Length: 120
Ligand code: HEC
Image (cartoon, rainbow, N blue to C red; front, side, top):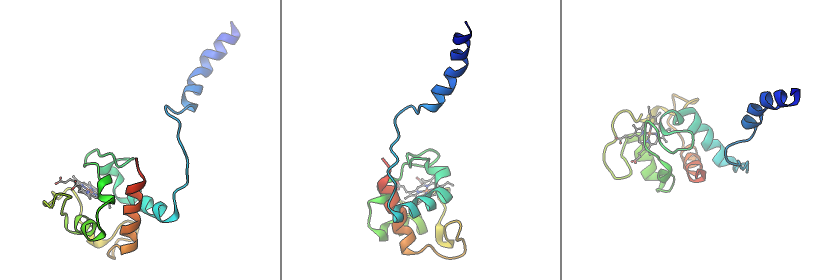
């Protein structure tokens, strides 16, 4: 009786301890990790925890385009298909958090693209 009560009480804990699907924790290369930090400080709220989209579209493909095209998206709001993105998509000419006040560097943008390419 007591054993059953303990099992019933502990069962939810085991359910919480076991992730729904096994996670792999391969560390990201430093540059992609730096891109991940930028993504989580700036983009995650709209584009989603795994870049899957949410309020805003999935932008994994933006990791694959040439740097110049990526800059046009992030600074001028030119979408993947060349159209003007609506103003919900911020124009990041004043920088990424936490470095607001200076334009993002090429390295920051490349790191961000590297990160976008790592997400599945
Ligand atoms: C406040 C919400 C918001 C934030 C924050 C945001 N975006 Fe967006 N983004 C959008 C929306 C909404 C669209 C789609 C706009 C449209 O279709 O007109 C978009 C579109 C895009 C696109 C174009 C996708 C396509 O299919 O053409 C890219 C690339 C993009 N965002 C990158 C980023 C990056 C990188 C960051 C962070 C540095 C970011 N966004 C942060 C809302 C956001």
